[in-house]
Length: 468
Image 1: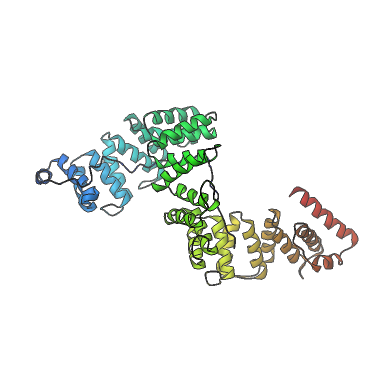
Image 2: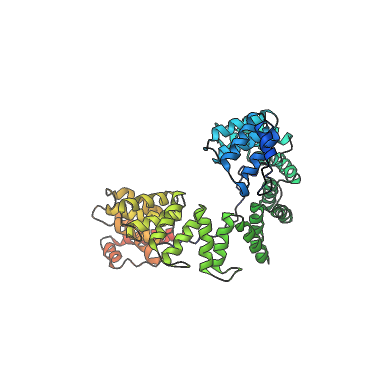
């Protein structure tokens, strides 16, 4: 089975809309609920209701149901802060049943009264289609309202939208203006985006110094995305690896799954850290348990090989399954192999064919070859020679010598035409020159061709190899 060690990727910014969950000021842990506060809240004092709700929300007196009840009373009394907080409770299912539509209704009430944070959240809801039908125009409208009320992340998201041309005309100048304004107003999200814009030249001229400056600003705010992005920037900077690892650890300790995965990779490779498969597995596990697909894949690979963890092929299949559910092609391929060979799970050619198909459609050449084999042999479903040939050809065209060998076998079978046999010789020859010996099959097949035909097939193989 293929072991897939996924590398850290320094990708261009994924221009996604930020969701900020720290919406409101939370009181100190263990805030005491005095009798007078309780009495004032019961008598209709909205400020006291908020104090009660916030106190019940803290760890020292955590009671999300009571917190939601008091936020609701304050919200019904028209307090926009309470309305916004209650909406967040509904969105996350804290103290109430999760209900994104109810969340939107409370954000709308607060937003209509001019409360900037609610306007921002309502704009995000429209852009994401969460609790309301997706509507970019409405999303932009509410973000503009929030930006007018000095919400920096609303400004930052307007920058994102102008850069991509979503809901507004694409404009690099407006994207830079909004993002810079948000960054100067303290949005760590905007600082990260500004760093990425300068790093990759998205809407601005590339400038590594500016990129590093803005990443450092975001990281200095204890913003995990900023810490991670700064770390990734420094990894590729000469001499920057030790500091990169420091920032990577900070981001990982705050739950950034990309940083956790990257630490696992660095430990696995012994890059900047003592090589330790045990430590690598530990970091992969943290990211995998949070649903990070590449970490699920690599943890599965560790379980399959017994690297850093006790060998357990059932556990390997379990983690491959989790990654495959997220569409990770290498995991889909590994699952196909597991089902075909019965490694860590009951042999099942039907499921093997299914997972090979998913991986093949994702471009995995090994999966194309394996799928071609199952289709040709009629394993896991009906035999389909034509489809088998198509998948084998696709794999061979992408440089898989095993697929070239399999094409030679399939194109020289009892159903083969004369032109098929010519092609079979070509593919056998390609496999041979790529290090896979067809054995006597090649010479036996050539003996059935005329010298001119054999020479043509060999010339075709040379021409193919010259451009692949």
